[in-house]
Every structure is written in C-alpha cells, then in structure tokens.
Image (cartoon, rainbow, N blue to C red; front, side):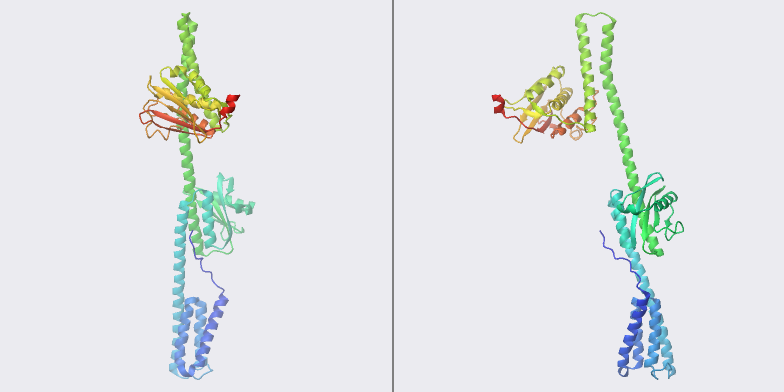
Length: 507
C-alpha cells in the first residue's frame, strides 16, 4: 500500500494577506530601531530580501501587497525627510521607484517558480498514483477487490463524501451495486446511472447533464460498450487538472473491469467447450457400450425364436445373454453411482462387516472375468470385523478388480490383500502383473472419463473415479502406483472401527 501526500489545499486568502502585513511591518519595525546604525539605504535591501522570501510561500496578490507596503514604509519612515511621503533627493526617488519595481518583479517571478514547482510536484504525485493504481489493479482478483482498490485512491486524492459502484448485470434494465454503501443510492440516482450506462456520457453535479443531482456519475467505458457506472459525491468542485486526474483513474479502473469480464467470459467459454467435449466423449462411449450388449441380447433372442436348437446351443446363447445383461447392468450402475456422487446425496451407511464375505461377494460377481487369471486373496487370520459400508466397498473392489482383469495379461496373477494397521485404518491393495501406469497417467487416473493410454476398446472411464468418490465419502483415500517388479498397485485406506474379537468369540 502506498503512502501518498494529499494535494495541497489553498489556505484562506485573508490569512495570506494578514501574514504578509505582519511580516513586513515586523521587519520594518526592527529596522526602524537600528536605522541610525544601518542607514536607510540598507533597509531597502532588507525589505527587498523579505519580499523575496515571502514570494516562496505566497501567491501573486499577497506579494503585490508586500511590495507596495514595503515601498510605502521605506519612503515614509526611512527616506529623508522622515514621516512624510516626500522624497528629498532625486537619487532617492529613483531608488524608491527601482525598489518597488525590483521587489514586485522579484516577488512575482519567485511566486511563479513556486507555482510551477507545486504543479510539477502534483503531476509527479499523480503520475506515481496512476502507476501504483495500475500496479494494485494488476494483482486485484474479482470485482469486489477492484472496487476496494479504486475507493482507496478516490479517498486519498479527492475530497469526497462517498463513492458507489454499479455494474450492468441484465442489459440496461438492471444495474446491481457491488459495495456496501449502495443503500444510500436513491431511485433518482439509479435513473441517472442507467442513462450514463446507456449513453456512456458523464452526468450529474458539475456537468451539463442532470446537474441538479448531488452526485457525479462517470461511465466505465470499455472497448465496445459501457461496463458500469461510478457515482462520486464531492464536497467541492474539482479543478480542471483534478477532473482530468479523476477521469484517468476511472479509465484505469474501467480497463481492469473489462479485463475481468473478458477473463470470466473466456473461462465460461472454456468450461462450455470442455463440457461439450465431455458430453461427446460420454455419448460416444455410452453408445458403444450400450450397443454391444443390446446387440448381443437381440441377436441371441432372434436366434432362439427363429428355430429350435439343441440344448447345448441354447445354453450357450442364454449364457451370452446373461453376460450381456451383466455388462449392461454394470454400465447403468456406474452412471447412477456417478450421478449420486455429483449430486452430493451419497451418504455412507456403515455396518459390521467381515472382509471375507465382502471379497467372496465380489469374486462371485466377477467369476467369469477372473477365470482367466490366477486370483489370490490375502486376509490375516486375526482380521477383525470392520465398521464400513458393505455396498460401497463392494462397488470399490468390483471396479478395482475388474480394472485389473482388463489391463493385465491372461494367466497372470491378480492379488487382493486386506490389513488393519495400527493407525486404525483398513488397508486394501489390489495388484496385477501388467505393464503398470506411465508417469503421465498417475495424476489423471481418478478423473472422470479418463481412459489409460493402453485402454481396451470400449469403457466409459468412470470406474476409478467412482472408486475415489466412494472411498472419500467414507473418509478414506486411494492412491495408484507401480510395483518394483512390474505391474500396477492401487491402495485404499479407510479409517474404520473394529469389533472386540474376544467379545465376538464369546458370542
């Protein structure tokens, strides 16, 4: 945050004139006490020096008074004959005239240099303020923060009662305020703000439009249209330079607001584009996944209806229909589960569970898929009952094991191990002997609709994302990696309560 020096305010003109009179009279009185010692001509140089000093601090009017007063005092009190306005010698008359001219020119020129210095200082302060405002706006994120930065600079550099910011949110029919002070904006002020927003023209007090209003309304002009309105209530009218400075500040704010709007539009466009890609991907994937089992069922049904076949052939067709139905049901369940996760309506219903029953249920469902592999399950003999959601964990294991069967070579080993560790977590590891995951895949595996680089034909890419959602819904975590000797490993950790084994045995 910068520390700024406020613009110098003009002091009361009466105070300026009074100060000049006091200084000139005081110096003259002091010189009068020593006039016999220093001589009357030296007094002129002293008074001339005093006028030059006064010109550093006061304007042209007070300096003109100081020059005139100094000449009159020097003439009346110091130039012989004293206490008269008459000048005895021609040389003294020329000195008096030259004194007045030199004092006046010196004072005016010094005053002009001072005024130029003040103007240069003000320009420097304004330039620094514009730089600092640009710097702070560059780091501002969001419209509320932009409003906060702008209000800070308005209060630092201008005498204002308050300022209000209004943005266009629904064409020109509804301008909604952002800052807290907007409750003070009247209906008449809103009408003027709407007019300014529509016409992109400044209006309100000290302007040609709606000059009866107490506030001044500035449009936030963008490259193509007006983006909003800034309403400022001044305590006094601005000078032309101050008005130009205010409009420059508002132009910087308008540029930042436009960039913020464009950034929001770009993000929205990107989201829409990504949503469209996801929709097409999901639609194509689901269409493919649905077509295969439906075609299988329809083909088998037509075959069975068209002619009588031996019992063995009929059983084979029934088996194909059953497998297609299971595949179709699996797809529907994945879609429903993903819908539950995204809606936020998923709430675990834990109960006491034996992990042996859990894995047996899953392997029975995947009996056909696992028939081509050597399946090993590792469960410690002292494994206690765990308090988890049986249905959710069944879906987790089903998707993990199914995923392993789809990517691991046939006749290789798929291993599932269970462990209750000292940290109070149920740890489940599913490993295979496939090619594992590439480094690029590890950060994307659990994203919706993501399918691996070596993914099999078909599939929706929902399996692992559902695993992640179900595990996290129970307060756990899931990670993926590669074994040192080759193959993939997926680890699930869920904090669980366990039963007292001794009480279970007694019961």
